[in-house]
Image (cartoon, rainbow, N blue to C red; front, top):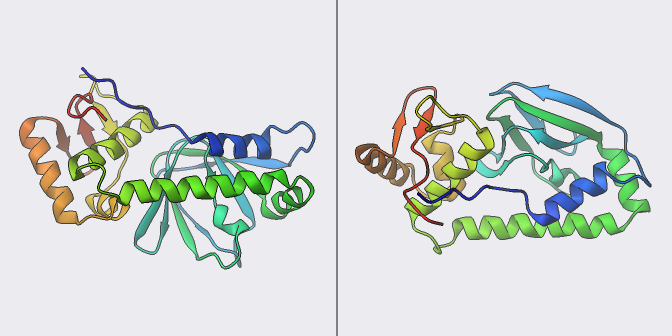
Length: 217
């Protein structure tokens, strides 16, 4: 059986997290916050005053109806607050999430005084743009793309049932379609095929997926 690829934050994201949280030469004050599954936060330049780093759980970042990113441990929420002219974004907790929150002005001050952090920030933004382009590209089939997202969600969620199947957090077909820039009909067709082949089952609360043997990505 093929082992699933674990979704890890990019090297650039890890470096930015270390810059913000693990720099003994320039400590930033922070607070720890817990968010229940389904809870929403809105980030925009005129309202938000904090940047957050995920320490446990999964969040989804949206702009309007467009799902932009799925963020897991060690990834930063609200990077757009550091960029001029950012649009309002909504962050939804897919699971219970633990966050470290930093005041945005403290982060800006550090970026001015420890300017190599700007290079790290640019690297992360470029990495996310590259990930977005890869997600929307034709390098994988629709089935492979969907399966890769399910891997990411299952491994970040870390829950299995008594049979060893992965229990995914709530992530609707509409969200999947928006995230991959495909139609909901295409997602439904893939899910129907996999249900018939015994790879997954669905309920109102959860999606259960067999251990990942369908694709080798």
